Amino acid sequence: MAGSPQELPLHVRVEDFAVRDDELLVGGRSLTDIVGLAGKTPAYVYSRELIDRRIRRLRAALPAAVHLHYAMKANPMPAVVQHISPRVDGLDVASAGELRVAIAAGADPERVSFAGPGKTVDDLTSAVAAGIVVNVESETELHRLVAIGSARGVRPRVAIRVNPDFELKASGMKMAGGPKQFGIDAERVPGVLRQLGSLDVDFQGFHVFSGSQNLRADAIIEAQTKSVALVTALSRDAPCPPRFVNIGGGFGIPYFPGEQPLDLAPIGTHLHGLVQIAARDLPGATLVVELGRYLVGEAGIYIARIIDRKVSRGRVFLVTDGGLHHHLAASGNFGQVLRKNYPVLIGNRVTGESREVATVVGPLCTPLDLLADNMEMARAEIGDLIVVFQSGAYGLTASPLAFLSHPPPAELLL
Ligand SMILES: *Cc1c(COP(=O)(O)O)cnc(C)c1O
Image (cartoon, rainbow, N blue to C red):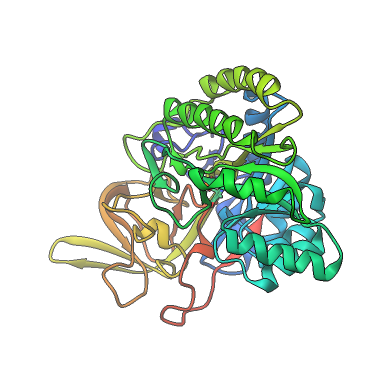
């Protein structure tokens, strides 16, 4: 029996997660089998099939000339990185630890870049030894890199990360415009570029990342246009033409009621035009888009088991073995201003025999440990399984696992 769309929470598509005998299926497997395979609850489960579907959809919408990179910090599970690496054009790492996972996954160092403020001499040494591109975030970092290159007798591959003079409007997280710890302020970049010619580095291009979690195609399009225009102006002072221009990403996914999925079609159409503009103004440069959550966020779920069912002064609490320590974002404490519920349901009773409003909490001694607040769902019993959707990005590795010393969750790629 296939499920109907209204049986699944908002934004969770039946074609992505089917339902059989009122139980959720991931990649054709029942939740009960998945938990059996994981060996325990709580567990994060990611679907290869859903990741592939997402990449295919992106490839169909974006021009073939635009390179697609995976920003690993969204989900650095080695099996996930290994799966995605051959399906994209490059990996973006944000630490030397991620770099090692990327290399172990078989990524071509030519196609790996390293962004992030505060790179230490050890971080930069790892990057130079691997032969990847370093997106330089400050003048200090550039000189550190030059010293490492000269000591090793190699020319480090560098790109300049620019803090642009604009921001990505309507973003969940703004990472550019105004004073920021990321990148070199656009107005300082020409001076840095003029120095580059006399330094022993291999200039590769530019990186402009203006924000994250954006659901508005028009805002993304505007930032992409401005990024290419800014890089075109900056390139006049570069020691050689840029080979790569990373125009950022920011493609968001819908988490909450009222949010609509990002419309890829206008972004694709616009990028076709931008590729033409870049061919004229930035000859020889490949445009790169770097995406994290858009590739993996909707391909993962978090499963927790109900340990207790309590009614406190008329309110139903479902107490689970999982919570904030594994899934900070779903608890509403990962940068959200107003807490809203992620899509949540009872995975082994999708429709259920009766419905109720319940609050799903974790085992931590803090009222912050909330997975669903006053949400309508099937009436659940002890032993049932809670499923939190949109959990493939910024889940396990973005959570305070050690908080309260509970065991870590299982993690599976199916
Ligand atoms: C975090 C980050 C990303 C990924 O952001 P998503 O919202 O997951 O797509 C990409 N690039 C840079 C530089 C980042 O810091």
